[in-house]
Length: 352
Image: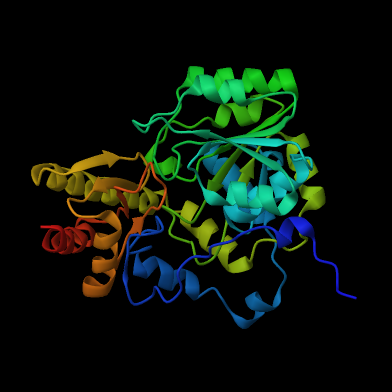
């Protein structure tokens, strides 16, 4: 007699990130290639004493400071172990087995992966051939069976954004059917037109932020759920007791105490993006500003072949796609001009 395995988990196919990336130039996962300033990191590390490590995490001090930083109340916030865990909590809390979760496609894979794990029906709204999204199709996909609608603004990987009117239309339709809206703003700092106000004013809107992208704390794992107090309370009831680690909370707290560091990193990455796009256009490449900290570029050679050659010959990681819509492109994470020159020099040599 065999043992029981949850059928949803048993039937979920997973592809996990590549390992052994430390010795490479990393432009494949939308991290900051160079990270936080070393002097800042060194100053925070001095606070991590044996006593600090022996105490269970306490997120409230960070949350109260973060609330003031973005202009909300403590009751509007919840920390999670990265946005990954925020997604799991939200789909567990507001999803219903057999009912529907609407997302655009392609999008961040952990939405459909969690649908599979939890027995939710994923309803993808596909991109058009010109890499635009039809909001009419999103609205039409929302039915009485819909429990959750997900919008990434900007979306990963294609980088589209939503207008105020489009978001209002989608929220209005979810009110009609009793669904919640998750607006994932992982790339907020690169495209600052936030929809935060809807997370505070609407009963069914939830906003996600992360400290993994611009804030350069991907190793520490820190995500934020922002919504009305009732939504936050529901998610709290299902979360792990000690979800976010103390090192992540400490780094994040010290970082928001230094907004000048955050602004400097924004300036550096914006400068790096402009430098990269200008150079690619000068070299007559088709490229796309994806509004986050990444771009699309269409190599002259096969995109998968170029990706493999960059890896093998230059120790450079970029992201290529098997998806029919995106197979001709590579996605390249953005960093400083110095970091981007390393990529561009290698790319032109291999794709020339």
